[in-house]
Length: 511
Image (cartoon, rainbow, N blue to C red):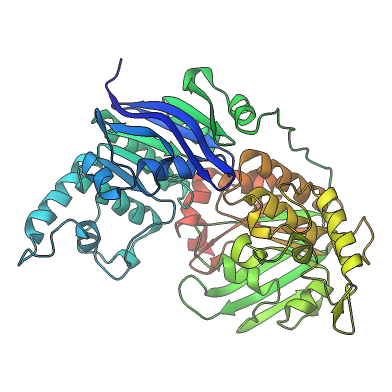
């Protein structure tokens, strides 16, 4: 039996009437990787926030190396040896690696900083665990994979013995993911214990020794990886057997949208450089790449949110002005990257969000909204797209992530009340459509996109998830630094070639 380094006993936490965690008990052994799985809203974030001292549990205790942690005290958690690497990095881009690692580790009253000692310690930690990064490099100039190394180095520099990793591969190329897994193996061999949070079941089965599954705030099971399968884990997460995504027969049609030598000026993450691409009806075109390489700008162009500085963008052969209303009227459906900040207005009720892209016609007359027609349409959207968790008057922010995405899908693919039930968009711009969703919601979104494609829609799928891109796409192109590779049949790509292109090598060298 491994030494127990972390013991969670009877932890419960409520937010009003919502039970975020209910009587959760689990242990973590020395040199063990324990995966934490669950749907959105299952209670994973609440639990690790309690472990790290960000939240105070209503009941229960957290014990680290035999000592009960004082509740709601992140400093005490750090002193006890708990570290956390968040999915979204918490680094200062304008500072060096060394400065980021040292932040918060020295008392303010010390007259001088011990940088020489810190540099030597950082270099030694990097050498020992295969996390080599130049201490003097500015973080803003590092790749995504290198920034993640810095986050892990920050934790190791503080002598953490328990490391919480939240979706650690979400923004990594395949090669960077492989490097991370090799690092984790070294850390675990050295006695570090890891809580690994991920939606990618293949990774969970590969990295972990045990898996804890949460559902609706309760611990459903803790199982050894040897006894688990992807199908069983998914069923434990959602409480039912998941239907398989059914691929529909579809045939490539005419060009629905074309970009020819398009360039957009802007910062590194917003620029496009001489991009050409044709999107055809009845086809899913996938855009792979690490987030922040111009994908959002490409999506904005195809939703009418901005105009190209050079080149042309046409829809069915017609150049449309940069006006979102014109693109919606031309039957372009959008699924934005940030559903909370861009896709929905959180404080407005579900029914108003369901008509927000179509309210002028046919839901408004003389400047007044026809509430009965609008609510009737919203009710149809809720029923057809299985939006759960509230009624017409529920604020959109109160819905889970999966149900928010279903509401956006219903608005985008259902058209306005004047559209027939078999309405098919000309183009669907799906930007990170399953980001942060649980396995059940992912399958639902995928099926809706496949069904729309089979009915003749051109689908542009922009995703950081290579498995998603390869599973759904007929053709795949890779974006890096604002440049786009030629779109080739998905079967012609290997994961290694995709990873190289995502890092700016290989296919892009010849583009």
